[in-house]
Image 1 (cartoon, helix red, strand yellow):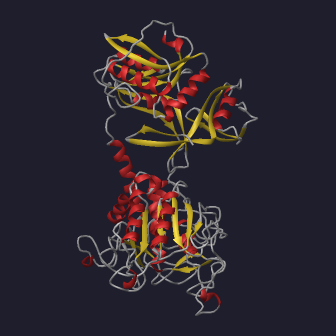
Image 2 (cartoon, one colour; image 1 turned 60 degrees about the vertical axis):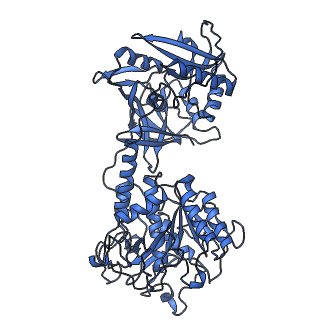
Image 3 (cartoon, one colour; image 1 turned 120 degrees about the vertical axis):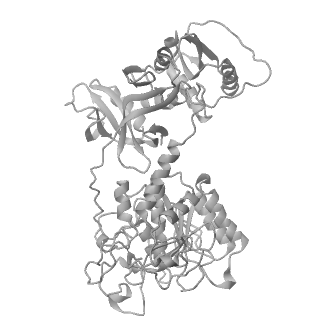
Length: 628
């Protein structure tokens, strides 16, 4: 799927092309534009376009859009995009805000506009203008990318339109949501007389409201456990690359009453919002069930390696050991470290472990690993859950049982607490809320809640490293319990406090914007890649004046002829094509345009462009006669 990054506001937007939506302008606004291909009108007016949905077929949206553009009634057709972590469509209006370097004059600025067939719309100052694309221009987003690499341009931003929030985010309608006090605690449990503490929750619904959505489907949560019911309505349809280390296959071991723990754990992190039952913290996240826990160092290596190789962003583990005979050896420690540092293409997988339910002054050996987020439990009264292990390694705590339990999904073969009979096997108060659900708790319940919060953070800022995520969770946690418990901000019982999803998401967004705004200034060379020093030795230059004809790929425009020679040598060596150099003199300065290839048809030039892009060289196809 096509992706690109552009400037927007004070930060950057990472966009992916829609596979079904396009924007159209027609001669007659009332016409049924491309009626044989259009399946639905999504927005009547966005950025001056009608946003419509096209029929899906094997051709793909690019070919379909080309077909629609051929319709007599269609004036303009353009692609629609989505920003990472957002479900709102985005469309470029065709205008660009261009801020030139202050030392440039109008003739130099016009040269840049001419290069991309742009039309001046409005001049706001000596160096700040608004321009728009024309029929001959590339896509406005691509133009913005090209312009940003030109030394004469300080900043360029395409004008975009997208539906605005109306500030009335509505929580999902899942029937058990009012019971899920860990997401928003209103001070009472519905259908009971039990009172909780208002606000003693993880602020998840507040985070959804801030985001305007419930997270990204690009984020993958691996839940490592046993007993996953993949037929459960809140988990079915979300499964991504499942694997069972007991069966050594994608067929998960199920039906054994001894193993049903994975189902409730997974549901608390990512149960789907489907209008019924419960909902997880990150209901849009993909679910990677990894079944078959083991103390074996070989199995530990295999499990974490599997998660890394198959694209897990977050690894949630609600198990461990405090037995002194079972401390981690160096291989297990290294397996966790490797995943935490090398996963996610070097940003590191976010790894969480429960501290354990033993009421001890030390945590599970796995949770004590320095590269993981060690999760303790708090109650619906914002108090310490007395079973939760304690220690200096505790990172944060999250809501779980201790006075009133959580609601979680239940595997179809789960027999519940066999010490009881009837509904009390599954429900603390004996009152059923559905035979596919149950009361649940422990640090096993707290850990996947934090995993879901991590998924929301990565939804709004996928560039966060695993270390960033852990630090943000600690920095944004709410201090609960007695202030005297905290030494240098840390408590042995609560860690750095009870997680606050809203504040964590807000900080993730702030870092994304701040990080983008502080990106280094592009290399001041009129080129599509950083300037290279010309290689030593001699260049063989075969000069001849030609009347340009046909099609080529323009690589860039240079003010330094050394860069022209260096790039020309590289292009000829890599692709074996001819190089055309077109000098243009403006305001006493010479700019050299470099064009690769000379083909009778645009199709051949497009093929060269594709090969060059695969080698990391950006260019655009143009008619050579326009250089004359």
